[in-house]
Image 1 (cartoon, helix red, strand yellow):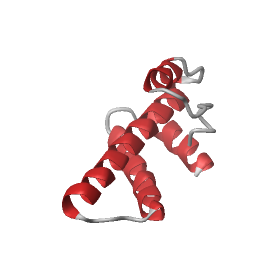
Image 2 (cartoon, helix red, strand yellow):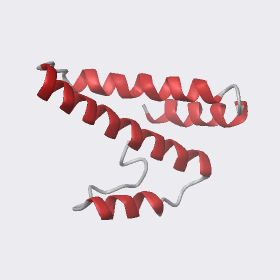
Image 3 (tube, one colour):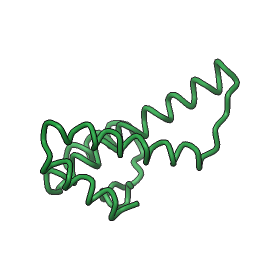
Image 4 (tube, one colour):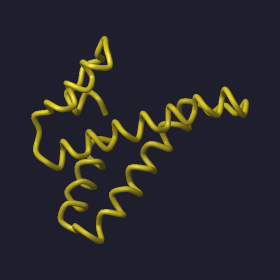
Length: 97
């Protein structure tokens, strides 16, 4: 998703945060980029903890599938409060996966 969000791998955490804050996209695209970033960070952290503390390892394909599933679930949860935004987010997400 990073190439579609126009993010370049940063050399530092500060640069990454700065890049995310300066995303020059429409509101739905910016929201989807940020949501995807949060999801990936969370799932990588969870994977790290599972490997270190539980000796449980998932494949990168499994983690990627989980990202897609989590984003779809999050978009579906937005549908109740903002159907138009959810429809737009889902259309953008489906065009990029």
